[in-house]
Amino acid sequence: MTATIHLGPIYAVMLGLFLCFGLGCDSNAPNNEEASIRVSDHVNALASERMQGRETGTQGEILASLWLDSLFNSMDLVPRGEVGSLQKFTYKPHPPMQMHGMGNSASLGMALVQEVEGRNVLFASGDSETAQWGVLAAHYDHLGFGGEGSLFRGERQMHAGADDNASGVAAMIELARRFSERSPENEILWAGFSGEEKGLWGSNHFCKNAVIGLDSIKYMINLDMVGRMRGDTLAVYGVGTSPKWMELLESCNKDSLTLIPSESGVGPSDHTSFYLVDIPVLHFFTGQHPDYHKPSDTPEKINVDGTLKVVDFVERIMRELDRKSEWAFTPTVDQDQDSTPSFKVTLGVIPDYLFDGIGMRIDGVSDGRPAANAKLRRGDVVLSIDTVKVVDMMSYMTALSLFAEGQTSRVVVKRGSDTVAVDVTWD
Image 1: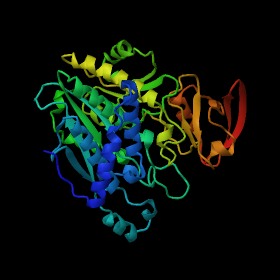
Image 2: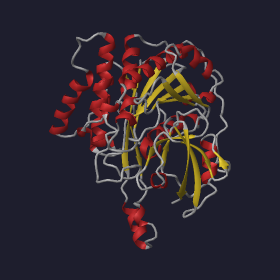
Image 3: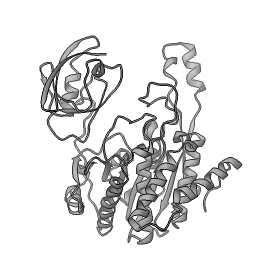
């Protein structure tokens, strides 16, 4: 039985509008066009002004959870929360930074910080109890109107979060639709997590208070930012968490996607919570971009065809996993606190995590930061910083660990066919 949440008449009307909008009211298009329409509609609904940026603990998050609950219910999936489909959790946010160093005022401020209640939305593909579960997850929360986590420096604006992570939710819904039409042999848990942007709150709570046995979960697949595919390039994190992942990925790659694999099961998204309780994980990601954590992450920039390629790929993987009686877990060699370089300066850029060449390719430049001041551009590939050769992200971070605020370094980048050297003053 689905939980009833009282939001008042205006939210009931808004929810009704979203259900029509989100389910794709036009059913006269061919199948591939129908899927495109559905994905577009879902992204538009979650990223709309009515959802208010979906920050955990706000009315926007509540409305988004209701919207997701109704979509899953429309597919005759089975609620698997603690009250209907909902699994609620509470956390106390960090106090505002300006309170630090204010003595008794800071202590008072910390005491006044209210607990935030979030909600995971959980559905199962069926109601049978099975020894084997797959988990397909996407976080539906975002940053609301900015604040902590935002990279935007202008006036307060809603952060729509079309790619982060309306795209992943839209892909999850499309996959749930396909599996509801052709049911799997084993159960699948469809998990819409909240609190991801706050620090993996929802997935962490689930793994500590799982509604199904953790030892019965065969795998977890995480869809986070899958809406900006460039070419046919797709990053896949966590491939080292099972010895068979790469073999399976290659056999299911019927669209000849260019895969950028990474072994580690630890990363800044919800799959980490599952990896840390010894569950094999994969995280699919179409790459960083200059709109990340800014109001400009809007629906018209979503590559719907690319998102559907991810959906097709993940469906093939999940169908194959459904035929496997077991799926082995292996721990990965993760960077720990002792081996990860510690640094106090930043270049003020967004790295291109899909770049597989030599160096660190810049995918975005923040205004007023060292890179922008030195006239570095998006697309530049950092080859060296002073005497340190940069061949990948780790060597780039190692280089940053050598400098302090106020120092000036010579940075060499490849810009097209040219090599350019600039002086960067660190902050």
